[in-house]
Length: 424
Ligand code: AMP
Image (cartoon, rainbow, N blue to C red; front, top):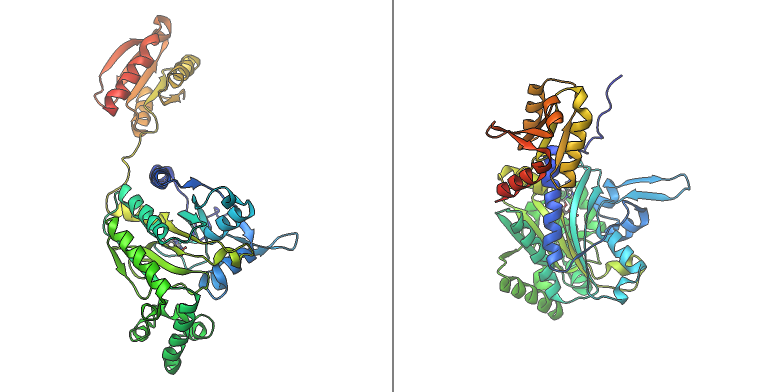
């Protein structure tokens, strides 16, 4: 029988990466938490309609990439492809904005899209995100971008470029859509198949196409069609970013095709990410989303950062957390007869706050010391017949190979002192 493999496009987070993984979560908690963003968790499984309305028919994600199935009750359910729609649903359903406005939330978790797997593109991937709900003010667009930038600084990533654009409001985009259709219609025969469809259903997405990039060269720019209010909003965002010392690049081709996106849209790029995978994070304002989901109109702005892309960039740059030992000490019984004594010793150490692994296996001491070293432990505590009889243990420093005898009652204090010395 063939061994069962992981589903294509999914991956395991094994212990060697898990430390960096947890560190990313903690750092995001710390940085976003420092701006007042509180945690929220929403289900992975949602009604398909949430994404059809909340991400939008006409997008690749909804049209081609969702994991959708009908459950035994005949309902169409979908594994979430993104986090914002679920967070907005949760906040509106629980009336959280009645008490706090703006409401600042952060989330982390797996997302699912049936894309073609390749480097930086998975079918199950993970995002760290924030949403700031209930206030349309441009300084909150700035804040959201700043949280993302400070987070990437905190994890030690250099070479991030901040691409920003304004999508204006509904009226601006209606003018822009008409101008795009006028520009592209005479070029229809030269467009790729996807773009011909986009021209009919979602002309803004024409600017996203990598294949038809040359045709976008002379295309109209939304920037030239923005109304006064939209101009003002964007100018305030740019001024706010500058004030925060965040350099940004205006990217006229950064568009989102759906009506509930408005004003600021942004992506964080990294110089070493290429092609379709160049974005490390994406975000923007979505003041029309809540209404699209059937709730009262409620402004919002947020971002989502891809954890896999971030981790692989950090690994390439040699950044990331120092690796952590599995435990500070390994307590080794020298023979099966000392198994219980070794377990009691390990228990005592843990109770005193020293992370301790018990090795009570029936194998030679040499093998136990090698295993202890491979866990990264600083000490091996040896419990043999003599030790049990005398109430002391042999303590071996695995870095220096020096060995000393320590009374059992003083062991924890001795190791804790060593841990504190090492922490320095
Ligand atoms: P989006 O929700 O499409 O704006 O994506 C936000 C971020 O999530 C991207 O910039 C990527 O870092 C990450 N991301 C999106 N799709 C994938 C995927 N299929 N595999 C890995 N990361 C992804």
